[in-house]
Length: 347
Image (cartoon, rainbow, N blue to C red; front, side, top):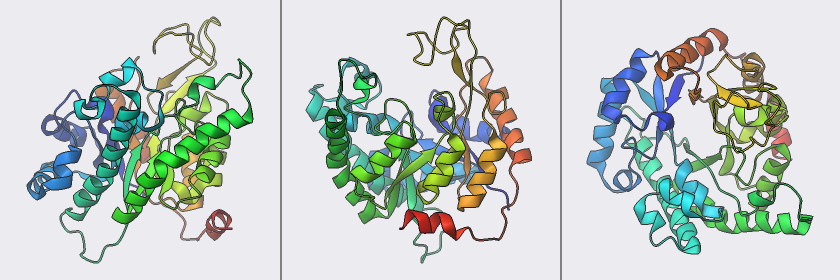
């Protein structure tokens, strides 16, 4: 059967979930990927309150929706980042605290570990879930990076300098991944500029930095790869077993007036001078049919989750159109098992 189509609620956090859920259903979606901000998914409540979990599932089911993943990008960003005043605007007050950078990083790590417990509780509480269901839950997110600022290698940057950044990531995420293991939850990094992994090469180094921990994988999103010139279909074929979730978001590149390049020129999204911008699904340069084929080939069985982001378009129109586009494009997977991809990962 075709995969479920879900909507990531992160760009809709201005709406309470009670108002968003019926809208999501009207837009044509099967479910949601719940963001851990706004009122969409409260990590502390989900980690401690069975009543909260029941109420959340009741709200979803009353609107004909389900959920396959929760996402805590904002807290995850602070785990490895060099903290500055910008982080205060995205972090819960208890994580920001007094703003001391190392304190923020440690509190963010603890909150991300608590997110694993919250997600496990949430999916265990799903109505109709068989008691013997041992499937892993999924938390999507960011990691931040202590070395993103050194992306351009001047002043001269050595591999040793960059390797310290990957070691820092491995040291900070090792305990986090152990907690995810204890909770039977997978962490799916959205490979993305500003993260420890932002292309194929850095994704390989990130996997190595956590000693190929089985709980570390990826929330695949082609929009962050295409404009960089990264082969976004090759990414799927290289990391197939580690793709725990998939975002559907489009991007175009090679536009603008020639005055702003790939680094963005300190311009805002939607500025007509920009060489690239995020687009509603089907309106950019990403070849989604190749993506669906590759996801089928590697045995990805999860949802297609629309992360709608297009400053040039009304979001309700764009989200509805994106859902229709994907339903027409997605097609049932072959019954053939593609074991080679799994064998390659486990060699």
